[in-house]
Image (cartoon, rainbow, N blue to C red):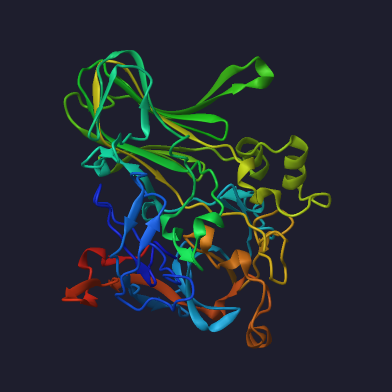
Length: 499
């Protein structure tokens, strides 16, 4: 469940930006040596820092113990709920406790498409429940799952490295912009945009926690990276005149999603060019608020979210506007992939006899997103400009050497949907790219088969211990005494409730 909850890990800190992040511990510091002991100083030779994209090497981060958590056990009066972080006995190794996020509920079918979870209840008397629908996460859960791709406050103090200037991931289209130390100013004019540089900073589901070494090789070589379209763009915005207009744009799935801050109204909308109608623009307005968008001369904290097929606009920590678009699996595949229409139709209909492997597990079929900040008319200034991504549930195949090698992983292909019985659940890890969760269970312990359940990947109610509620003792800070290190100083700042 890293980085939401930590087992053994290392936590380097960037000397350039002050950003710190967690990494899975190296199984071997040097090929042929034994596992690192707690406090031993491994050498990190990572490709890049997560938020500055600078080369990184450090010889001192200590191996830390994991978080200590408190759980609330399930009982006849307290039952599992969707998106709970749960502690379970795992079907293939029931002597071990696993921590995962509960996504699929009893009686449902679940299909993971383009990183999101779709469900339906086949036996429901309600027609709407029998149809596929996307799952949307509650606000507290969603806040936990945002991961920063970049944030302006982590701009390096020294903006040169090895004699070359460091460049922010935002590129202005004209000289109307001034970019300096995390402060971006539009001087005013008919139009100007600040676009995310996707060539140098690809927007993918890569998780820095997986940037570790195994047998002397970097795991970056083996873990696929998928383009991700569930994004949050945020900034502190200062409109300098009453005429200043600001637009946040996320381009994804063939659409352009916009939050529009105009002098007399706020709008959420999306548009696309219709190839069947001579490329004319088709616009859908999702939500409107007829009032002064942003106060002139005052900084407002803005966050525009495109997540789980919904648009959300937050101002100063309050949800001001929201709206949804409810595509079914066929529409989602049609807009988010470059697969031929015949293949999309066959996948959506479940007619996959002529389709080998899992074509949905190939990252190159998915279209990448784009992000822009757009200004018009009067000048505006931006600080703490950041881009965050949501969790992305990866489609996979069972790996080589397993009993089901080469077949689509559970719930990642229409031929293999997860179908839960009356007491079964489907669990996923927040670190989906490197998570042993319900998707990839290919064996069940004989004792579990005989006494509980034999269904692959589906977790029976009897295996559920309880909900993880609080991190009461986070991974400790190491204390240096001479050449020795002792890990017992609690990291009080990371004590928290678990969502």
